[in-house]
Image (tube, rainbow, N blue to C red; front, side):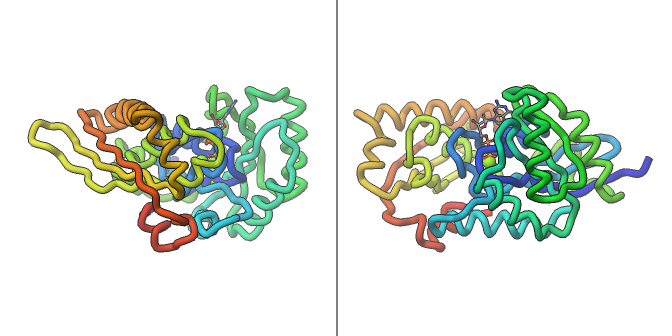
Length: 294
Ligand code: GDP
Ligand code: MG
């Protein structure tokens, strides 16, 4: 059997489970996951290696109608990535009828120069009939090459999904060493883990106004990795929320993020978190890029 390899975009509207799928497919936590839409801001790469194939997944920011510059930057990054892959996996949510949001995603995918594999996710939450209806309605919006039904939560349907993807990849060598699950720099992964915890522990609109900037990432003599990060928010009221009474919430964010970072890096970590008000950063391209280097 020839060895196959290629790049596969996980694309779709926000919150359908693209990042959860990525983490579960590669068996490592490389993408932040949350119930808050638009958690993924940059293209996250995750690598699945088997003896006969290597799939490089690109987890894209959700395709949506942007309301600020940050949103535009995110959607632009997703659109660009669509032109650089061998296959698009269009992820939709089982049991949800495609609404205006799905139409926006479908429109963005229409121009993709590669086949589209429809992935109906979250089947753990829907009946087979409802999943079937979702698949039919989605395919009505945008013609797809084939459909696979999965649950990123339980792993149901994964073997079929992986087989269907590999069958559509070109013949070619592995791009990355087999033990590599991502080529993202450690600092980016740490940034995402801190942001994910901050999102989990704050509410409402705040997560969208939050960016995490890694200021220092250093190996200390005692073997501890020292990480200093600034959490940027847009308003003093948001800073109050993130810091919490007597610094309580910031400490909770730090404790939870540190556990995740240590599990990821496999070594002791000291997290030094700061919160600062950076007004309107979401409207300033230089700050957006500075806080989200790719
Ligand atoms: P993304 O915006 O498409 O990347 O979506 P995320 O991966 O961040 O997931 C959005 C929400 O859906 C999170 O709360 C996930 O835990 C949840 N989720 C993702 N996949 C599944 C699934 O297969 N079943 C269920 N029940 N929830 C899921
Ligand atoms: Mg995501």
